[in-house]
Length: 479
Image (cartoon, rainbow, N blue to C red; front, side, top):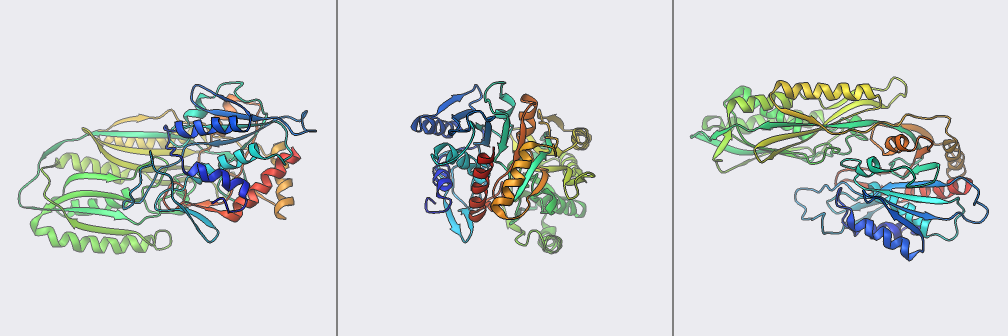
């Protein structure tokens, strides 16, 4: 990777990929950052949440200019394909180059937001850049709780202009984002002995693209949990379906790519179960032909389980999961093409005595965020589940008169020869929380092109990284 251009950035990104950094387990990468600061004789401080700020003085002639903050989060989404043997707590990410794309072998790449970290470190390491005083803010646990951003205290950094490096679209400047909240439904499982004379099988949905539940939610990609439940619903109406196990999806901010269930049906329905699955698979393949060409539904004979859900419990669960909304709920009235409100059925897991359903709601309108949250809650309450919510986080309202925005627009024309797009994003960024803690901040968010984030299909454009690096340097010089 060190031979890729811009070398200044990729020589910083390579060691980042070698350091395990799952959300809430960022100790190793934070220690690496402190060692980096010591190596380069830069001021460094850590707060109680383990956020780190590394500060670099202004270059000569820029001492009296207002300071700038470069910000990236240190954790990564840890997703892998089912057939990949990888321990995110201990193993480095295996990367490779495919044309213009940097990819990982069967796992997430971690360019979200490792490449943002790398750009900030490249600024800190460089001795040939022009810039005002720079604070590089590295936050923890953005992906699962925004813990670092929530914990920020006044005075931790001094810059008045903040460039968030967590966007994923080349040539686009983001000036607003959605707020979000998680909703958790817990069903106390009701089980009984498996019936005799039944056929047991594992039904699996796989091959979906998945993706980011904010950035990709409007692309119409399949959700493995919803597809699996839809098939089980059909079988349940046709015969005496018994469910022994269910599992699907992983992370609240990722669209579920895989899901499976162990089920039992009367022996006489054995062949019909296969035939119905083939028919249903054809329907799903047709529906997702433009978004998920690799979708696969499979059936494998399974050893008869000892217990199954009671019929009444299984019915309640299927009804709730089928009825629970997923996908885009409303589009923005003020910014054409922007998703305003959405919800993601992220995961279904058996945990101890409970079947746990994790969902995530987003909206750029605070009242709408709580409205869709309440709709999801109502579905699960009707089915008898215990429902709770996360703390949530605020959105970031756009400021079209931002002075920093104007600098970013001007410099992008110089670097790329064309006007950048100015947008808001449906995904969550930490900027809303920064603005709550530092209301004086002037903020934008930029980054190189990435696709497939939050999934093993994540890839980073090398040429776009080079262009974004030139752009960032030009912004700093202009500031």
